Amino acid sequence: AAYINWGSGTDNAFHHNIVRRTVPGGRANAIRIRHDATSTCYIYNNTIYNTGHGISYDGSNPYNQFIFNNIVLGSNIGFPGSAPTSPQVMIENNIAYNCNTNFNYTPPTSNLEVDPLLVNPAGGDFHQQPGSPCLDAGNPLPLAYMANDHYGNARVVDGDDDGLARVDIGVHEFEDVT
Image (cartoon, rainbow, N blue to C red; front, side, top):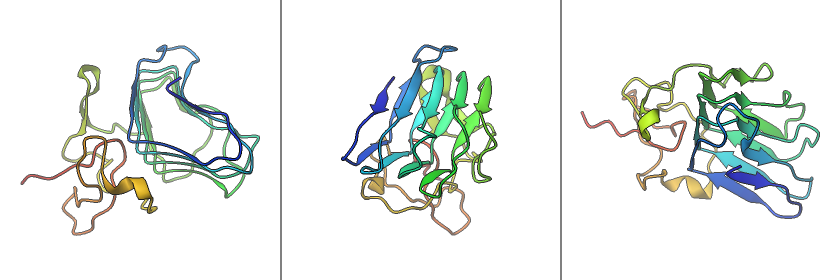
């Protein structure tokens, strides 16, 4: 696994990371969350490609798990586990595509099962193409670490040219150069 949160008493965030090839087709998790009610875990704006399981959260613990704006692509199971049963567990504005199973449950409607239109994931280019469903489609929760994307570009740019700037889904914030 690239990230495992098995803690208690501390808040954690895992964001703006690219996770690739963690036992493709297997059961290894790219990201695994399990913690207690005394901590909060934020998993956001990551891109996960060709892994066993994408993002696995602790369904038995209904406390403070926020998973949003992530892409899981070409993995065994994008989002294993069961549907959230608590408003303190938020799994929203994620994309799972081309996984053997995208979601192991019926996800909230803000989650999509569509091609994210990334430039060349197999070649390591995880930038969005023009017209990507990731553009301006992320959850707009303000977090301290959302100022820049994985590459250092400013977050919250109007990438789809509709006059409204909103954070993108994935590690990269698309910048329209037209």
